[in-house]
Length: 176
Figure (cartoon, rainbow, N blue to C red):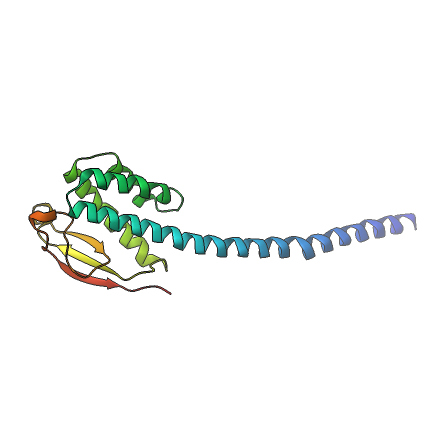
């Protein structure tokens, strides 16, 4: 009889522990995680928007053939890129920030464009109309793309030497 009572106590104790952990643990952490994820998603979209803003300013500096200004925008953009998971974009921005050689900045800018475009297409983070533009003569006629907020061509690979060389290849719509 003593054994039955002891087994019953262990069973009851185990049932109480199981009930407490099953009822309170996952519900609380699930709710908190969902709220954190929603906050991260909204914050992530804002951060990607800041990366796009920095990209566009950097592009304009390259259009103006201003290597110092391009470096400044890259340094400013790096602070935002460091906070989000865009490693290829981060690497490109670091490389642009590390030099004042305009031709080197333009080469790396092409990689920045490729990775940013891919990341924008793979997410719902694009909050403004962007135009994917192409210059067939960039880099010894290999061609290169860039993104712009305006449909009008302003070529970052040649600047004022060939300001209007290029064409619009694609319009990236706003993701709601």
